[in-house]
Each structure stands twice: as C-alpha cells, then as structure tokens.
Image 1 (tube, rainbow, N blue to C red):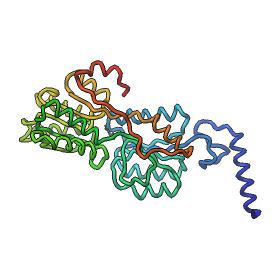
Image 2: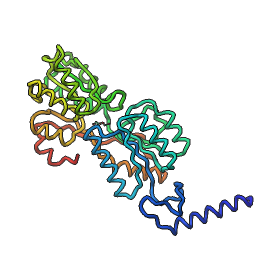
Image 3: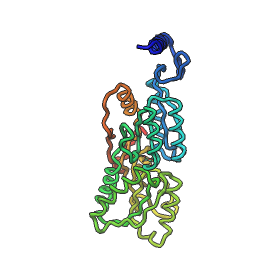
Image 4: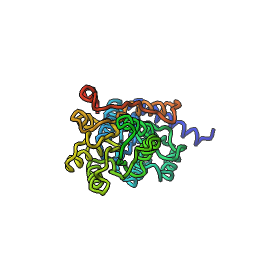
Length: 328
Ligand code: GYE
C-alpha cells in the first residue's frame, strides 16, 4: 500500500469514528459532511406528479407520513403535472446526493436520459404509482394493475347493462400509464359485446373541472341524447361529469350509468347518494410498502420488478356500509 493510500484509509476510519460519536438532529448531517456515507438518516428524493385528484392527495399524505414515522429525510417535489419539472427535480436529487430516488412519472415516455444520469450517479430508482417504458432503468415498480382495473370496470358495465350500452369515455392524462392501460383493459372486454359501443373518448386530465367540461360537450353533441353509460378513468372526472349530467337535467346513476376508478371517499358519498354506480379500487396508500422496499434495496436485498397492490370493486348497493371502512 502506498503512503497516500494509507493516509486515505486513516482519514476514512477517522470519519467513520466521528460519525459514530456525533448524534445528528432531524435533517442534520454528521460532522458537517453531507455525503451519503456520512449521514445517519436515509435521504429520499420523491418527485410527485401534482395534486390533481383526491387519489393523488391521499398518496402524497401516505408517503409523507410514513417517511416521518420512520425518521426518513424526504425531499418532496410537486411537479404540477409537468414532466419538465420532474426532470429538474430528479437532477436536483442527484446534486443533493440522495440515497434513493422515488419517481411517480406523469407520462410513460421520455425518461431515458435523466434515468441514465441517475444510474451513472449510482442512485437506485423506485417507481411508484406509474411506470416508464425503460424497464432496465429502475429497480422496482410499486403500483396497481391498470389493465385489470379497466377490465373490471368493463365487466361491471356488461353485467349492469346486459351487454348493451352507448358509452362515453373520459380518459386520464394523455400518455400516462394508467390512462393507456385502463383504456386497453376496458376496450378489450367491451370488444367482445357487439351491442356495447364507445362513441366518444376524450381526456379529462384526471381532474373534476375537466371531467365536467368534457362531459358537457359530450352531452351537447348531436349524439348526446343517445348516451347511456360513462366510463371515467378516475373518480374525480366522474364527479365532475355528474355535475354536468345534472346541469343537463338528467339523473346520473339512472339515465346514465357511471363507472370509474380509484375508490376515493367522495366517490363512496356519490354512490350512497345514488349518483355513481360503481368504483373500481386503486389503492393510493403506498407509503408503507414504499419504505419497506427502500429499506430492502439499501440493505442489498432483492426486490421484485413489480410490487402489485391488492384492490376490490365496489357498487352503490353496498356503499352505505362500505363507506364506514374507507381510509382515503
Ligand atoms: O387514478 C388518478 C390520479 O396514477 C393511479 O392518477 C394514478 C391516477 C389515479 O390522478 O386519480
């Protein structure tokens, strides 16, 4: 060993001893060194999409509270639905030398360059909620089977209508993983029933305001009077659409059957009121699973490529009882 190497080793040992003696307060780093090796707390950077729906708000709350409960330092960044903001946040996380990066990608494509930068910096990436197309550039995806959710919504509608319906579809954010896959699953099932037709599909951006606006244009179109069912890719858009249907003098849940996805509290209230017929659950409470996975990765344990969440289907018939047990 050269004398320079001996020196480096001695410095490293001393640094390790100092870290051991120093007790850090919250967010503080040991011995004034902010490198990941010298920190006593796990530091996680989380790039969240925004606050567009009740689902998203519950998801953020679950992740923030779980980080706090475990004493993890969470650097949270809200992208306000913009991919560019997410890319900026990710680059910032590299500079801040986080231990793990958590990404909920707003859309599926366009992440390769920044994910490669993260890989080169040696930081593991965990995807939560939504996927990107580059499978080799993340460690694991924690989230739902969106294709199956779309199938479940369609199966409910087939049963409720006897396989006969004139359907309009409110899609999620264009290019988003759940928007693509929920559509795929729904259409896959509907295609087997010649008397079930989707006559219009348009994005309502996963928000109430847009859901209401687009439903209004559907109803005012020449085909408006023929609509018998609505499939919304999330509850918020369905709740917006319910307002538009009422404003048009129609009865949501009766004149137009409505099925949506998420299972948020407001959807259960709408089912209790008879205005929404069915919601397919998509669980946003991913915090505990997320931090279990992060701990596994940091301990060098193998994690599966997809950690699936378990979900059910709820209808208005049992909503008054079900609502008592909802946690989001
Ligand atoms: O369904 C919707 C939200 O990505 C699963 O995004 C999530 C979806 C959820 O805004 O409400």
